[in-house]
Length: 147
Image 1: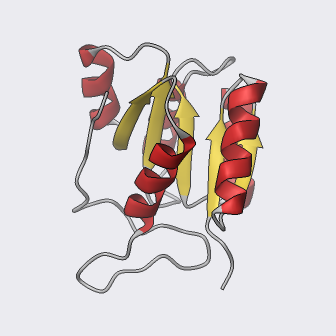
Image 2: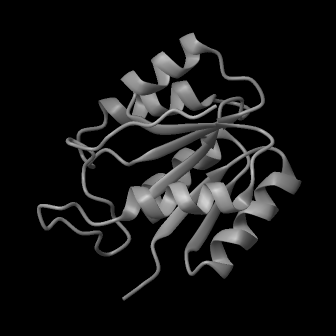
């Protein structure tokens, strides 16, 4: 079985590299993008199981990217972790409408991110599972917002 692909879209090289290392050591296959446009290309070509998106990625912010993906009916929705230096209540509400499963304010621990990714990828109690690096649609998934 191949390791689930996790997209990290963050323009901060240090954060991106730290998350890639933590995910790889934990057995995931990290993918990286430094902009919203780059993230969209990775999503369309590599079909990650989870997105970790920085709110302020350049060229196309996380909200614009998620809006485009929400309109794309050719692929199932993908669970998303939204990260950012400042995430206000209005941004969190907007994130929830776009399918974001959890939000994390920087700085956060790599262990906390790993825990949330593992929870997102955990097979559904009704027998759903993650296969071929794709996550099941989050139709019945819970949304957690810890700040």
